[in-house]
Length: 434
Image (spheres, rainbow, N blue to C red):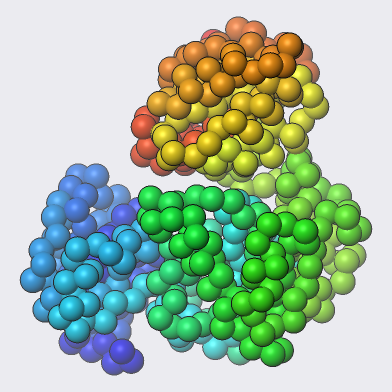
């Protein structure tokens, strides 16, 4: 659809992500008659609705109705809603087109697009790449990193560059568009979001969308020697560029080998666009990291407190643990059970942590795995149940030189609305008096 004037458009899933709010604003600006529908009750969406105050928008909150979806001219769905959702299926059967905010932007963006995906590290890589490219270009950074660029289309020119972080959900909805970026960057890949995609294979296949429709003259930046790299390389007609941590290393403020890995991914993509190493190094030297990603949130008495709430899979929690000296980390682990295996995380904690503080639904499982380990000198395990208790326990046993690390290896939904809320709660508790 190119002409939205007087078209009835359903925005499905308002949520709290800025993309849907931006989509509503953009649609209204383009003359659409917008109905926002969300199963979440109005009181829980008050902040998002407030951002749209004064706009001629109709709301259907606390429920969806089939006739809204089947009578629309277009549906702009939140990428968090699976395509198999009964209301989207009904709309498709009725011949109603379905799109997303990110597709609306991509189809109208005049600039070359560089896009980043992966299981973990994609936000940090996107931010680092944006910094590097900004040394030479006018750059716009957005997508899943938390900022919609839809409302900035008028400011973007053909000579600019756009850097997008793309989630597996976004990429799945882009499948029908048969689009891939000029430069595709793939970071660390593991199994995640199986509940949404249906299987690990379907999750990986959605990720492959980032390279599948590239052409000669495009570039696919892939991790050297990693599982699935060959599969991605086989899917693209672009020039494949491999990166690894063995390249000239960057001086970084943020800790961890995984952040060096993210920086090398960003550098490989920036180099394609003509950015030299010296400029890239200057751009990232003072990068302090993104919120909830190995973020130093408090320091007192020689003890440092790091918020890594974004670590919602075991592999990410292991990478965070490996960022610090052996036996210096008191790590808070556990949370919502996504059905992921914890053997590798438990083994790493047993070998490297100073103490393990378990919370949430999976806390007992992780603790039991550590207790059953054949290793003789395992880290002590404290079953804390909730985050407040875990932080209090950490304060009672941490000594000078220690790191208290919130890197749970699990989602937060058993006790928190999302990982951001969990990370903020940790930060507040860390800074509070005992």
